[in-house]
Length: 115
Length: 110
Image (tube, rainbow over all chains, first blue to last red):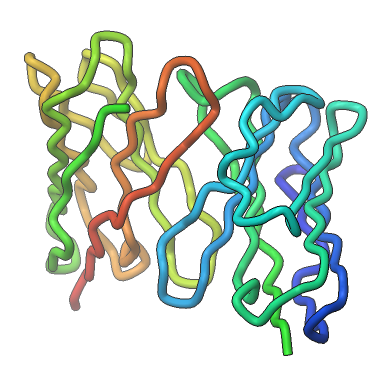
């Protein structure tokens, strides 16, 4: 596709359930980033991938959060045992390489609501 | 990582130039200055970036001072659709962390 695609666009889940959020980056982009944005708040960095490797996982809020990337392409962000405070828009971005001298392109996000 | 300081909010009249300042007094020699914006309910959008020289593209111009301690994003003819939060960011040279601060909320008024 032409841009970063995220699915689902909206997800409502019950507290305690696991959810998987998917990100399809722009073809050929080696770097991929996950952020979340709670209502009325700024963008919170979660994790980035260079290829399939995630060198820094310190931004993940808790051990209930995990992310993987396979084949240097699609990435999934998994939240186990969801809590109400996990409700947010989860944004994915990709760039041709790490962002020192290239722009990142963002998807439209997945709006997660935990009830 | 070098930090940036931006005004919390600014207003601009439609059709006028919007000049958004950013201070980055601790910037290091190899750090780029990036600008992104986020229109309400959308993902952030890349605008422009530069290292030392002034840059211009179809969206905006970026003016970086000679000492690189501050920069200004210029939207030459602001429209109502330019109402957004504008972020000035200095990505670290050795990681992929693109950290967004609070940015400047630009309100373009008719």
